[in-house]
Image 1 (tube, rainbow, N blue to C red):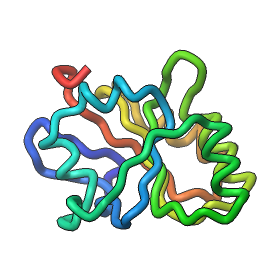
Image 2: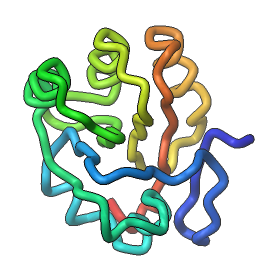
Image 3: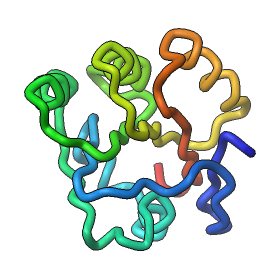
Image 4: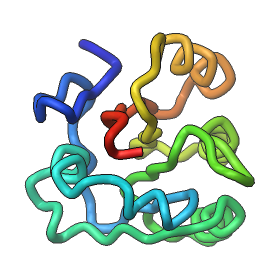
Amino acid sequence: MSSRRYFSDARPLGPQPVCGANVAWVGPHAFLERIPSSAWLEVFSSNAADSLLTTRTLSGLESDLSAGEEVDAVLSPLFWRGGDGIEVARLLERIQFSNPYRIVTPPLPRPEIVLREIKVTCPSIDLDLIELTALAW
């Protein structure tokens, strides 16, 4: 199975969509506004209307998960000012988060290299990339 998803043609190729009522977005809220709604329909399952997407800082996510808060999935950009997906992956690995973690990124020339590098450090997390067209960025 491919480790990438493309939204430009609305045919997902990668992992199953994110399911659940409580999804954490780690990263700038402004990124969310640049992602088209059609892309979010592919990210979430058909129950997207039931999903709550909350913006959190990396330290806020760590506090919430350490306190036992249920988070069904985590999403973040690959890079942003003040953090990156590798930091998020390391946190999730350290606290043994078992739900999906998806990194949202513009199309990359070799996404398998990015995935491989993160999975070397964080082998137990359910990780994948969601590539969005350049128009979304």
